[in-house]
Length: 295
Ligand code: C5P
Image (cartoon, rainbow, N blue to C red; front, side, top):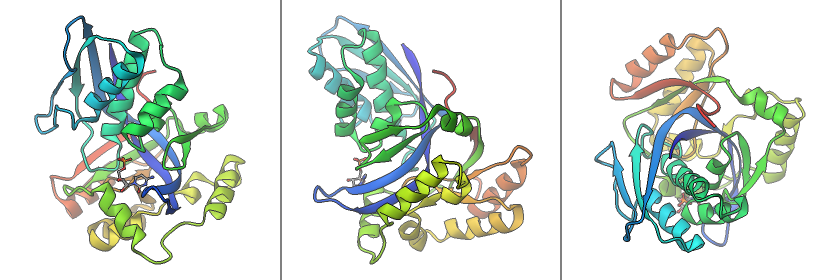
């Protein structure tokens, strides 16, 4: 079975405090985008560990890959003894804040659950996904959701709100440098007054849900401050995009990917040219939509 494995963007990422387990509590509005990888799983009766191949030779194919960890966790949880051959068609860059590895792992869990006639409930899958990574559970939903806790508490949105988000156009752009997620959270934790106020953020999310606050007004990322201090090329480009094109930009997750929501009439050429001029030809630029390319 072959399934699309989308990237995501965080439209809101409010980090509200440090937890006793070393992670951070967050409140995030996150959406899959119509850009991503493909995961293919073939089942046979061979014994032995799952085998992974990938179109990108730089992606590790052993136990360090979340896809292998997901496959092993699924087999252990279900008691199934099957041979699994998994192929990853990779497009999502790493250290990009686009959730590539987490998406691949969640998609692997979903494929396996479908292939074996759904032995696990969504709650079981969420538990497995949470063990694999904080961004993994959101990808089990394949639509925009709100995340709380360290990422494992998923709130599904009203269908009319989801419908209002799906199809919105955006441009995603990433400099050649990547940002390590633990580094970004560590830097945030070392800054005074760095956390977002949980109650105020909840109030803003509620206002947005009720149609009293535009999505553009809700857009915020707590990790921008710590990342921008070191990678000054990001805020510099944001400013000139805002000035010249009137487009609001946001960093996704811990970066280094950034995105701009585009209106119906906005053309991407000007933005693409600005990204290339500021960050060079090795910068990634693509246009896509909020949502999924398949079910
Ligand atoms: O859960 P995951 O392994 O993806 O997290 C990677 C790192 O990001 C964690 O080790 C932690 O440093 C940071 N993190 C965090 N709080 C979260 C999610 C991630 O502090 N909610």
